[in-house]
Image (cartoon, rainbow, N blue to C red; front, side, top):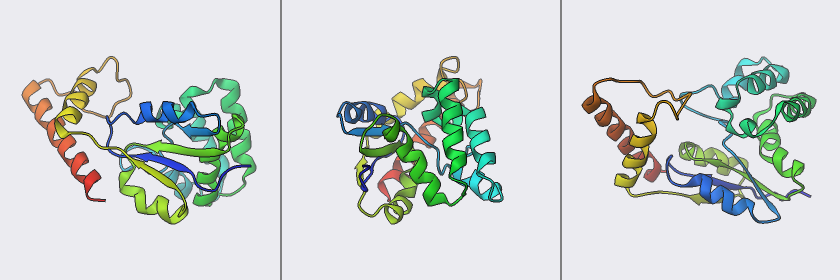
Length: 196
């Protein structure tokens, strides 16, 4: 039986959300799904797909399975598991955002026979009110980090283009401009996170 109070890990990126997820998942009752990208300002997300699908959930599941880098939790599945995931999502036969989000959050927990479920949303801190409205009994772990550490970590990540495939960060050859833009991005993200 699945619990009715999911756990959400939120906060700006580069704050060890993966580490917290891994620690929680060591518990025999807890399954925290990797990033779902349910609502995302820049990338294609499930919420936008639901709005554009005109009531056809198979359009949403097709896109998700064909573009796993946008839906990080799917990168952990092999092709057979992705096929099973698509079949189960299509059985919902609805594009109601609450039902789809419930499915996405609880799918891994059911698969792993765990009763406490949730997800990490490191870039979804701006949707905290949305999550609290949908799940008033949820538990939230809000992560933050000193801005200097956040900047240094993000700078390394965004400048390592070979390792960070799929990044939307522009490849700017003029290094001082690139470093300045990364700094401004970090400051904005950090400010948004503390103004919830």
